[in-house]
Length: 255
Image (tube, rainbow, N blue to C red; front, side, top):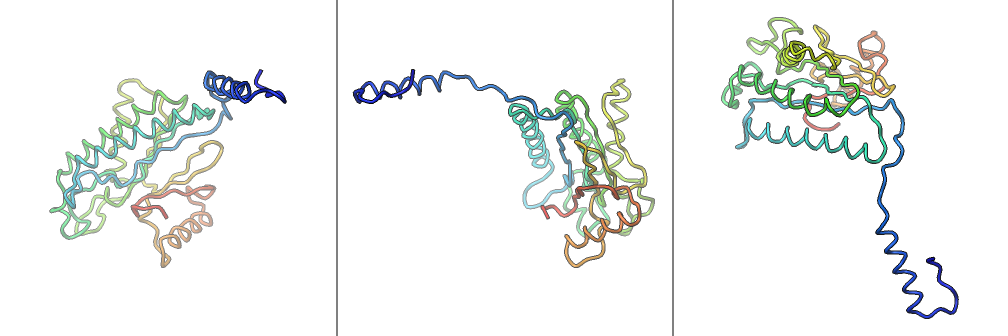
């Protein structure tokens, strides 16, 4: 139908091209076949530091940016599905420093917050609800996990005064879990640590480790600190000893 035959006039040959273009435009794109059945989509909630205000920006700006991020991630899931990625497993991980807290982290902190501790915690819980409600309908299985950050610690005079389990980051996720449990919604798999500062999850057949990053100590660079800490976990049999990927927050930029 579209072949140009030797000897045809320029007009006839052009008609073949026009017919071919019209045929291309008339065809409807179809999603490709779904690939795999064990892959996962990971969303990280990290270092939002709800309540922090500086350079003319504050909590309202944090909320707007965060909600936009969730909405973009939801669209990303839909786009990946459209090109054939099944992704039955959704994972939401809170990487710590969800709230800013008000004092005991740096000298002028109390002058750089625009919400008190109670309001910070309340807003943080609402953001967690928003995230879960956005992702829950998209996956056959949803896992929600969290690790503790340094801004969530209960501090006095700049030092932690209780223990690792007493952390606002974990408490916010724990309160959200309790709310879903009270509505008899048990479709979510929860990982709420106690004293553990790192966790590992199986995602798409891969073990992935998570920690906030404030516990990285030895090393002259951030990368070296992360590697040395990870090496110690492997040799010491820590929670992330079998992880193939390690993800942290705390540093506010990609390593």
